[in-house]
Image (cartoon, rainbow, N blue to C red; front, side, top):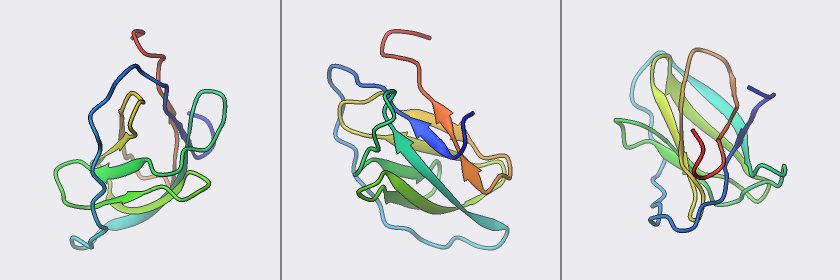
Length: 106
């Protein structure tokens, strides 16, 4: 993990990700803030960040920054057209970061 950034790699083709609107779904949630970037460190505006198993989601702003309510144990799914999606388990930190392997790598 690096600071509060999530890095997405480019891939040849990807399904269109549909942003969802943020919703509050009960107590014990923390607002997590982060930034989505490509491997070169360029912010990715318009990437979707959603909480798996819920209808909560958001899109990154022009600097790739997002903010979303999440409970410990839930997983964030970050996706963008033309990039490999990543799922990031939330373990209680207020900032979230992760790097994706390049397309075709594991």
